[in-house]
Image 1 (cartoon, one colour):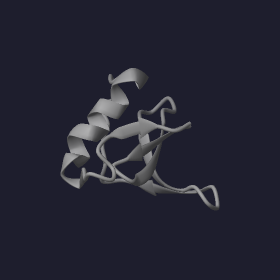
Image 2: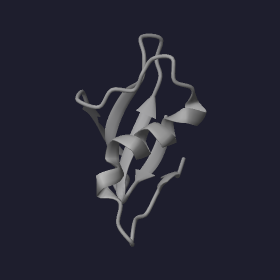
Image 3: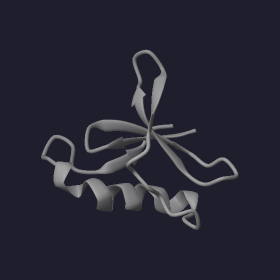
Amino acid sequence: MLIYNVFGRYLAVKKPPDGWQVFRADMAERKFTRLYDIIIPDDMTEDEVSGWLGDIFHEAASQRHPDVRRVE
């Protein structure tokens, strides 16, 4: 599972055979809740995911959280 800090919000992403899945990540308890309203195109590579998340959530950027970073 890939875990990103998306402008201060933790999201986890994994790609089983049927396409990308996105989860809200509670890093304190290591719990993950599936998010069905965030779609990542099936043909997107792992290297492109952070840019895609940045495009989707760019309105959440702030001085404190200015970017998307992969943390795991």
